Length: 365
Image (cartoon, rainbow, N blue to C red; front, top):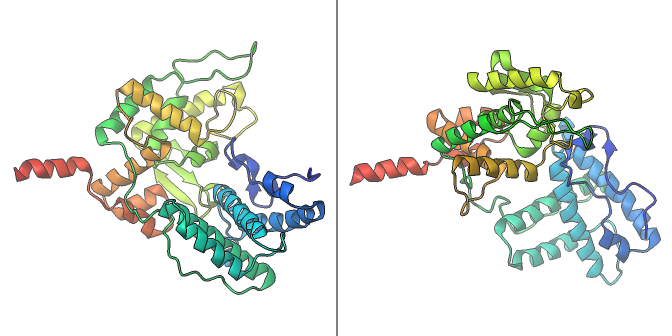
C-alpha cells in the first residue's frame, strides 16, 4: 500500500534530520513490508515502529538519564529490526504479528548464527535484538530476551583497521594546504568561482587530523564549537556523535590558525549566511562519509600515498590519531582526544605501530 503518512522519522524531540548523512534516513516501514502486509496491518505496524524508533532516539541508550542513541545507530538498528520482523512474519503460520516474542528472537538468532557472514554482522544483529527487547520491556513490561550467543559487533578484533603513518599524516596535511578550497557553490549562472586561496579544505582536514573527527562529526560541526584562540573545539553533548558528553578537544597551533582563517573567510561567504554548519559541500550540503572518503583519496593521490590494498576511509584518519596519540602519550590522552565514553573502546589502540616493530627487528639483527 501507499502510506499517507511520512515514512521517514524526520522530527521528534531531540532529533534534527539534518544530523543524518544525505544518503541515509530512518525509515519507519520498508517497501517489502508494505508489499507483504494488508492495509490495516501496515497502519498498525507503522504506529508501533514510529514509537520504537522515537524511543531509541530519545531514551534508548540510558532511559534513566534520558540519553538516546545517535541517529546513525537508530538508522542501522531500524534496518536490522525490519529484517527480523519480516522474517518472523514469513515464518509464522499466522503471518503478521506484533510484538514479536522471545521464541521468535531466539529462532532468528539461531539462523543468523549459521549464516556465512562475519562475527561483526552477527554481533550487530544480536545488539539490535537487545535494543528491541529493552523497548518491549519499557512499553509492554515483557521479560528480557536472553541468548546463548555472545557475538562481538566489532568482530572480536580489538585492533584498529588501517591508519596513516606519521609521515603519511604530514603528507596529507601538506596536500590539504595546496588543495583548492571550493567555494564553487550554487548553480549556473550563480556559480561562485573557486578560490585557490580558500582555507576550507585545509581547515577541514587539519582539524580532522588533530581531533580524529568521525564523518558525521564533520557533517554536524558548527561554528559554535570553535575556539581557535585557546586551540580547541568545544563539542556539547547534544552535538556529539554518540550523544554522551561535553568534550574539549585539543588542536595544534597550526590547525587553530587555519581554522581561524576559515572562520574569517566563511563569515564573508554568502553560502553560509543562513547556517551555522562549519563546512558545506560545493552543493551546499553537509558532508557525509562517501564525500569525505573521496577527499581523502584525492589527497593521497596528490601526496603519492598508495591505498590499493588498504581501507582508506575517513576513519583511517581517526585511527591514526588514536594509534599515534597512544604511542606519544597514553590511553588516557587518546580516550579524551577521541571522545570515547567507554575505556574498552580506547583499548584497541594499545598496540605497537609497524614502524616500531621494524625498528625493533633492525636492532635485533
